[in-house]
Length: 164
Image (cartoon, rainbow, N blue to C red; front, side, top):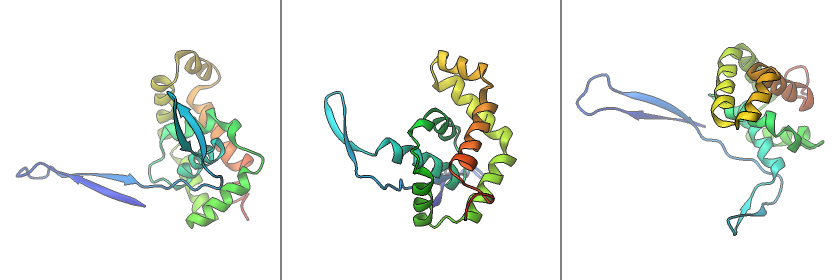
């Protein structure tokens, strides 16, 4: 679901600004697991549910965030052999069909420059310098984008040619 937040300055004509906000739920198939931070125990989602939720966010968001694509790239190893089936089940539960997925993948490809700029920004500002340098020497944002698209279409069998 998407809601539009509207802001304006009272008594100032044409000052209205609208910001769309996507509200997404994390579909889970695993029971929460206990983890600790600073000696406090929290229940959290499994690594597999979290990375699968990143994939779903990329497929189900109006505005795809570069951070989600970078996370899919960085945490690909958290996808399990059954992740394709698990994601398909979660997408079905969310009412997202193969046509919608195919359209979103086409939008991603069509907006490649926008996404690679966002990915590049994340690499440059949110990753440690050594990791950023390694990614940039390996092809940078373009390589990350291409690899994420390969994960979506080949590894997870998403898109028109892959889904039944």
